[in-house]
Amino acid sequence: MAFQTFDDLGQHITRIDTAMVHEGLAACYLLRGGDEYAIIETGTHNTVPTILALLKARKIDLAKVKYVIPTHVHLDHAGGVGGLMQALPVATLLVHPRGARHMIDPAKLKAGATAVYGEAQFAEIYGDIIPVDERRVRTMDDGDEVTVGGRKLVFIDTPGHARHHFCVYDPTSRGIFTGDTFGLSYPPLTTVNGPFICPTTTPVQFDPPALKASIRKLLARQPQRIYLTHYSMVENPQPLGERLLTMVDDYVALAETVAETADDAALEQALMTAMREYLFRCAREHGCEMSDAQLEAVLGLDIQLNSQGLAVWLQSRSR
Image (tube, rainbow, N blue to C red; front, side, top):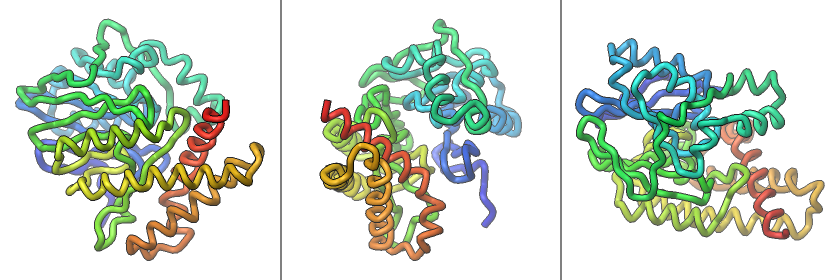
């Protein structure tokens, strides 16, 4: 079946592929309530034309988009915020209190990403990061609510992946937009045993106890479905959440074991080797029959990022 940039998931929610790096890596969502809309996650600045193309194709008045809502300010989730806000005349940006300043003045975000990728690769992956007028920014604390055409959205503070992370509960769909808090689950790894899910420990604020508490907080809502940024919707999330809790502990144990024998210079590479072996084994135990090369194509970027995040976490504990 041909890949779909836009996928209607029911409940008046459309999954939009952000086209970051490759298809099927990162998603954002268009949610409709009555005659109003919200965009949850934005992808990168390069994603903005794709989002606007969907609105145009559906003849949605740009003034009907009430909110832009990144779950946190990592650039695969919020890099497109500024460009999107420029295009949407009345939208309000809803953002975590710890992330708002980075949307108003993204200079540090841009400098950090440029330092990692270099200017050329930064431009290719992320495009740019546009500041947002602070008068159009509203911070959302734990338990805060808004309505989109009468459709209620509830904000849940969920540190652990990042301290500037919230999730968005939609009682209408009994679904939660979880950003990176509820891990990642790529459709090619789904088997007869269901979705394959695993935590994401992207640098630099991985906090295992906080992440486990946040996962439990989401499960306490007893959602019927989860809308993942990486990637799309998964249903029956209770057993997936229990699996995530176990895997967070496994990640910690893996990192601590590697740190016992690897010096600082070799730490990240050793973590990548151990993370690759662990996730490949878990995928195969789940019934995935992909080759190592195929698994690497799906999980390679996350193996690298998870290992970097675990290295930062180990180093922060030793200070």
